[in-house]
Image (cartoon, rainbow, N blue to C red; front, side):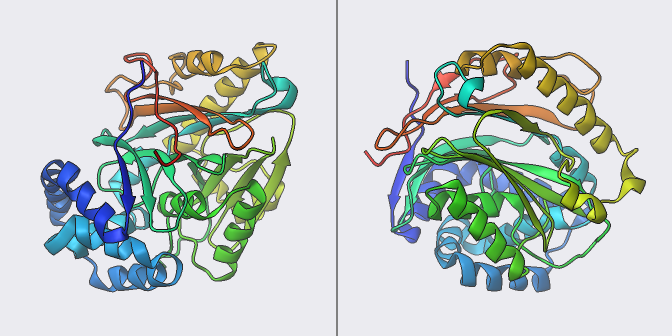
Length: 360
């Protein structure tokens, strides 16, 4: 049985107003709690920097944000800068696991993407959205996030973002965080090659932010041509590997040698890094034990609870939880990707097929 996500299509103001009617009643108390923690004050200077970036790269998002947040707009935009500051919540935002399978590694040759999302246990939403002339996108994220955590768009491109490895540079400069960058890719790109060019333009313009305080960002993407890419990014550098056959995965540390000089080995004892190392080894072990991968087999991997830092974390022993998991299967255009979502930790819930990202 399909459980379609809500679909909003129209101008930025119309889409923002639709989201306001659907979610603002739930978002307002959540937003109030965020700002009450530690008596946190809005950093107006940082908000102005973010507004300037959005005016350059995605001006419609500001219109959408204002329609959604209204008189709370400044605080809403301040929330989008939160992950760039030293903050106790940073630990809980650095624990996603993503697997990409292409070519002979899949049962029928169709590219597959698994995104297991670990996050502070904030409310989650999933929806389809088409703002103006941008691409229609099926996605999910946490309530109050202007960006997105995973996606499939109407060009057949699918993708996920992960927090990257710890960086030596601890810049407080505002940039587009990993969720905002993934949304920009989803709404403007049709192929992996286009997405890489966009990342390179963002890096050259110093528009990239961090995936968490002093942490980079990682993107795994696959498109309707059967190609995939892994991109590991700092604020100014983008390292890319193209994938056309086999299985590759990422958790929350960098593996490409180009990023080695930018990393901070002094932070390797942090729980976020130890979790990343353990989850990566487990993710790749499970994937390589199977002769070929299918959506159902990826769903089984996402339910794995072995180890100190499991792929599927549903207990309350760590600061983060597995809040959702998605599987996407890419098909040649004009067929849209197939998508399945579990709205909680997969060991506690079930996957359901979601509606396609194409406009009804």
